[in-house]
Image (cartoon, rainbow, N blue to C red):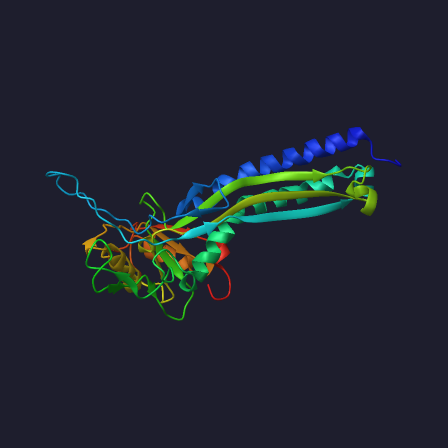
Length: 308
C-alpha cells in the first residue's frame, strides 16, 4: 500500500483514543495517591493555602462570637505542565500494524494514571528537605508550636522526623478532612494525536505520526502533623514511638490535635517487616502482637529508590 488512507487514519485515531481511555480508567482508581492525598481541583495557575495553620477550637458561645486572629502562613502550589510523546513511522501505519501500537499507547495511559503516585512518592522521600506551610521542612525535628492561638509567645518544638540509617517508612493519619499530602489537579491528562500528512503536518516532514499526553497538576503538603517519617529500624518499639508522637501533637494554644494514625507506608524492602508488625496476630516468641491490625499497611513501589 503506497499511501495511508483516510479510513486507516480514522480507525487509527479512534482505536488509539479508545485504548488510552480504557487503560487510564483501569489504572487511575488504583493509584495510591488517593489513600494519602486530598485532591484539590484548581482553576488557576497557582493555588494558595493560607489557611493551613488554622486549627480553631470549639468554645461555649456566651455573648458575641470570639474571633481569633490566626498568624498568616502563605503556602502556594503552582500547577505544572506534563507531557509524554511518542512517534510512529508512517510505514508502520501503511502496513496495518495497528496492533503493535496499542501496547505503547496503553503504557502511556498507565504512566499518566500513575503519575500522581510518582510525584507523591518523590515528596515523601524528599520531605525532610522541602518546606511546608510553617516554613519548616515538612519532615523536621523542630516544628514550632506557640503557647497562644494567634502564634505568639515562645515557641515549643515538635518532631515528625526520626532519623536513623535504614530505609524510610511513614506513619500517616488519613482520616482528617485534609490528608497529609495534596494532589492539585488543573487538567486531567488528554490524549492528543498529530496524523496529518499534508498542509505542513508532521508526517509530511518526518514521515511519522505523533501521539502525546498533556496534563496540568502538581503536588504539595497538607498538615505535617498527619505524617511521620522514620529511617530508624521498623520495629515494634519505633512504630509505637511514632504513634505516640503523632497522638500527642499540639496546635498553637498547646491544645491536643486529636490525631490518630491509621496507615503505615513502606517501600518494598520493608514489606515483610511491616507484615510482621501489623498483620501477624502472634509475635515470634509467642504471645499476642500488640500492633496487630493497628494500622493498614501500604507498600509503595515508587519508594524503592536509593535514599528512600
